Length: 132
Image (tube, rainbow, N blue to C red; front, side, top):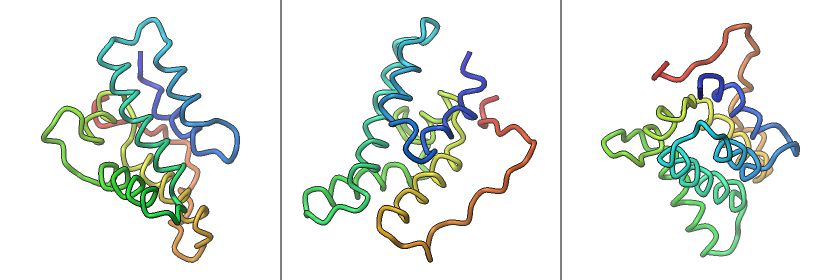
């Protein structure tokens, strides 16, 4: 069911082609997605949307929102059900791949190309989440 979502998840980081809310809305509307998966999509969508929206924020409140979203996304904690890595595993996303895309977005938004992570090399290998 969610087997190829990792590959499609990369699409949210393609420049100006799809908003995070549009991507996650497509997942939630699938008939084979459970209520728990819809809730997890809403949680991760909120964090990604906040991250993208406030990556270059200058207002203190918006910086705090970004910092909270970034801390949740960057945390390696898997001890609770709604941790970023747990949700990624459950939905079939590669957490590190999502993080790389978000870090690139942040670097571009802040105009800091010198610290942007290197582009992920294209390979024929299909990326899979750890739960597959």
